Length: 354
Image: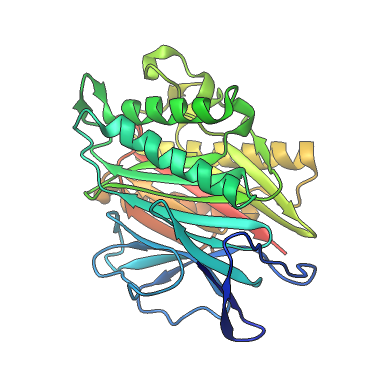
């Protein structure tokens, strides 16, 4: 049995598993994200999902909404929360280990799977998690993945003859292939970051109607990388544009200092941060040109997560973002491992307009 909350009635009501929520979305914002401190008061809208970073960044375990703790340390030292909300009625439920929130247009889900990344069954567990996600999105009639986040420890260490990130990529690719067959056109935007501990934490946004998956003219598509980066290429799009009524959301994947398929500016974190922002700006500009998107380059960049490999590099990375975006952008800085040893910083962003 799932549970539905509608802020217009301020009451909870039971929903049968086959019942889908409905609402007039013409004057509502169906999706937004905020990065807040662990002590911030509750949101005025329905919470779709809560991602907690840092020690004791925990909401009540009996909360209806999906929530997960990720073992990444905020670089300002204070626990932080990533909160996804909607103005629309929400149905909450669980299936196959996935906590989910369902609205008329979006499905938000989280799953936290205990895994030993060094063990021989790590890839099998990744495929199981992705299989459960595909099954849930199909059953809820929201089959189109828009955005995924993947977090697990030991990303750059070697196990079973490969880096764990390469093992993850192989398993993810096989899961997409098993579900879709020819899967390239179905790949969502995504991030994959190495944590300080824990298991495999995945959260995702799916939709009733497909978004527009975008590639970056400055970068080779990740799913086409040459074999030097692993036996199976990473399975994600550089960005995904989603329109709902008059609203737009643009999900920008984790973006690093890569041009073509090569890492740039080895050892120079400032130059890497600048290159990553240049890639993001190019993706926004090309999507605006091709799809008529309303967002206008770096001036619309607001909600960003920035993963920094070495905490001592934070001042330089923050300086670059402040120079390019100004001091008003909402940025969450986290310590995390990046997909390649020579990459020191990765930046992702979500742009939302009503």
